[in-house]
Image (cartoon, rainbow, N blue to C red):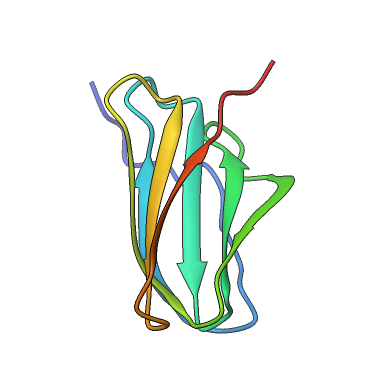
Length: 87
């Protein structure tokens, strides 16, 4: 049963526009005013040091159903499908 306790705060120098968890909850992705989406550990919120960049702000993101890809969409009029499978 959920207990409502905060697990972690994820801070960003700018505002957030999109957040997503992969289907198994082990990865999360966030994007804000910057030109990149960042991958995070889904349980701790810590950055994995992986950025998926665009020329404009990343405004939407979604993991594929098997967690192996992340689709990002940007104000630069591009969408990018990136393999994100981690060891």
